Image 1 (spheres, helix red, strand yellow):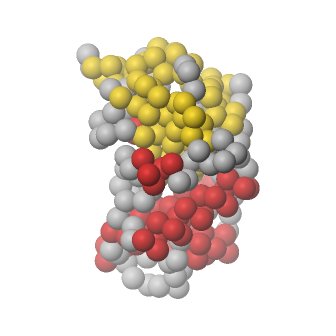
Image 2: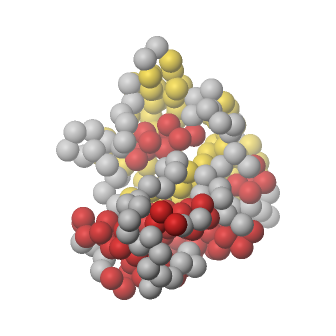
Image 3: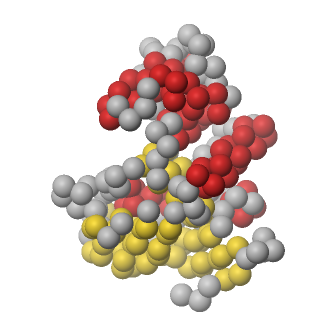
Length: 224
């Protein structure tokens, strides 16, 4: 998969929330969006996911502009903002119902996704009784369970303990090895830099710095 964001601008009312962004992303790499709250990270993720359209410019996935009948990337898993599931169902039941929409995977794949995030698919506990960390793990399982080509994770480490952070970083690494594009939004630079191959720093809806990791694991700034 190849993703190109071409001179994208997004207005919400009179406010410009995405300011002439240009970037390109390719399979088998981890891309980080970094910046303070309100800098445009989540809005840019929504744009790439096809949840909103640019006021100006284009989002192009595998040569096709996201618009109309080609509204979303064809193979995508995402966790944007807080995960939301049916409160009265177990974690497994929630994921199984979602998997039934496109019927790309069955029961075993759903169970395997839960095992990967250290949740028990046999646990009958209702989602409403999940801790914040368990809810975050279930959201990550939902994003990866169909083995998508594009995985978008908005602050995936939030609410996780140290073990959960390490587990999530390992999942992200394996998804990269599988060939997926992974996009992470994270305000914590140290955490993001230990995970991402490239980092785009956003300020007020604009990319103000582009960093690429070299073979020694150090970042160099790219002139834009």
